[in-house]
Amino acid sequence: MADRATRTLVLGGVRSGKSAYGESLLRAHQQIRYLATGPVTTSDAEWTARVDTHRRRRDDRYTTIETTDLVGALRAAPDIPALIDDLGNWLTARIDAVDGWDSGSEIDLDADIAELCEALRAMDADVVLISSEVGLSLVPPTPAGRLFQDLLGTLNSAVAQVSDRVSLVVAGRVLDLPRASTAEDSARATVSAAAPVTIAPVATPAPVTPGPVTEPTPVTTDGELPDPTDAEVFGPITPPSEAIALEARERQATLTKPPGSLGRLEEIGVWISACQGQCPPAPITSPSVVVFAGDHGVARGGVSAFPPEVTAQMVANIESGGAAVNVMAARVGATVTVVDMSVDADTAPHLSTFKVRRSSEDLRTTDSISLAEARAALAAGRAIADRLIDSGSDLLIAGEMGIGNTTPATVLIGALTRREPVEIVGRGTGIDDHGWMRKTAAIRDGMRRARKVVHDPLALLAAVGGADLTATAGFLAQAALRRTPVILDGVVITAAAMVANELAPGAMRWWISGHRSVEPAHQIALDHLDLEPVLDLSMRLGEGSGAVLALPVVQSAADILISMATFAEAGVTDRDDSAGPEAAPESI
Image (cartoon, rainbow, N blue to C red; front, side):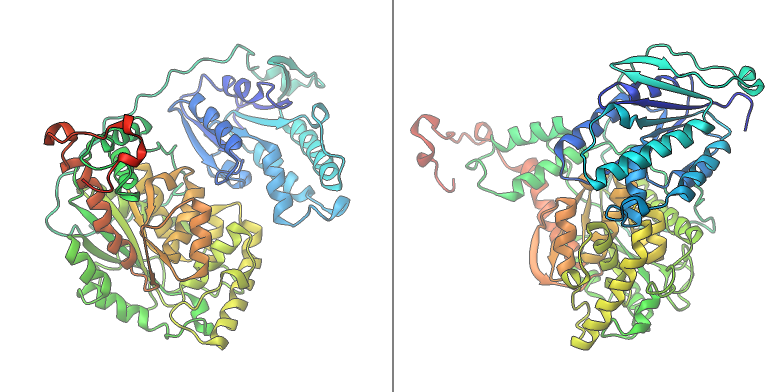
């Protein structure tokens, strides 16, 4: 470890100011990794508000990484200063991973704690760790409460042993705890306990209105593949503009129609305006569809009604323009590109530029792909999104093609929502009862393997996802990072979206669901992401077809705000509010 690198443990109770103090200790650094361990997809409004408060306090020096794999995150960049907030959530995830809440004192996390301490010792840059001092807060007198209290006390003590400094924060006051003096200690530079610095808000860049694209833009790299290093590290996601959303709603109220008479179409238009950062929005003229293709080893286990060879055949069909997604996209002016991520066959060079491998391993018994392959696939998805956005695409759609891919998708959904396999297994391509039972067993085995990495998005994708779903997750998360709206397709794409939102928390606000699939897992995934589909046509084809079919609705929603006359412009008398709501006509 470098001579001037310092490890600091900051302890405190709830609302004590420990996080703000920890941030102040790193104020001299120009680059800081914020390793956040709390849940990021939740229906708890108070927790979400707390997370938002913390995010607003951090400026653009911070790169936020929401993960519970602290060991992997520290080892990935030991030379970049890090702020870990907090150890309690990391501990909770470790207990969850081994189903330890009912095991009482029998749970053994010594190896996990030792591994974390070793990663801290290896840091070459300053690191600050935030943790609750369990003796300062009430813990429910239950077996689970006592278990957490005992383990967090053990964890804090172990981390304190490898820390250069331990501070206790009570009611915003800081007390540095003494430790035995050593020659190494006296040689180290201490960190001053100055008051936290108030950070000015970062200005939001002006929106860019993309120009039209008349020809499909190939997603090739001229022989240069994207660098997979830290592919799973995403910067903070800026949400669509709330101020523009309010402006768009106010404009909706002035258009020549009774308020709310266009139903959900009005809110979709508001969403497009907020995504573009302007009202009225620009028309959607350059939508792009990318179909991510890959085979899956589990398909050899009879989980699909079609043989795996069909994947390569359908990739050729999409490339030649003969698939359903091509027909639908041609009608609405969208380009279609198919990308071979892991097809178990040789495809044309321009299709396999980003190819990670042929097929994947059988998720029932081993990891689908390696972590290195997952990083390469994630980087590919991000690069594809970047190239389309840079070329002028103003809305993106992800599609998929791969025999057996609803099985890994369902495993991901089941693992992240903690559902039972029988609740979420569908018929996919139309399997019979025996096929359904084989598929259920495969999903059960995959979910059992996924349980230990459910809090690590990249490891989860490697374990049970495969290269195609991983690339899709990178594509969706990068679109949100680039402030580009996306229409999601069915169960496979929505499963990848769930993991993408774990990689880049808040990304789901840049997505809309195109349709509701008949696959039971799809509705569960939509509920998890708080998305309401535009269409419900009992579709289960994939390819991005449901999302493309919803595209004209989204385009029309934008066009309403752009071109529909206001009452003042049309010389039409507005509603007489004094007459009461009964006086409002159903149509103008």
